[in-house]
Image (tube, rainbow, N blue to C red; front, side, top):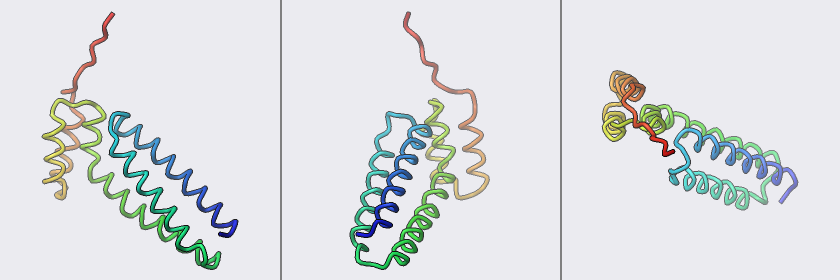
Length: 132
């Protein structure tokens, strides 16, 4: 494995850690699905680097950048599409399930996505009572 591949591997590892922290900020610490997804992404990158260990450095860089671009092109639209659900879960909205279902089934229409986002931003949230 070339030193350049090690630098790329470390960069990808740092990117995964950054996305992990962003996921914790978006959905909260109680959701393990984000952690599992990020571990799968990290494992895929590690396997990719091991598989392409004999490749030329320039080709390895091109492949890694292509893989990162593909990942971004898949993750960013997914997050944007489910943003109303993420907002509802993060705000502890009382109608989280209904908002998520509207987002899932009607979000492909712009009107359904807007309605779900407006609904997720309403004040119908659970209040956390503090015990003295």
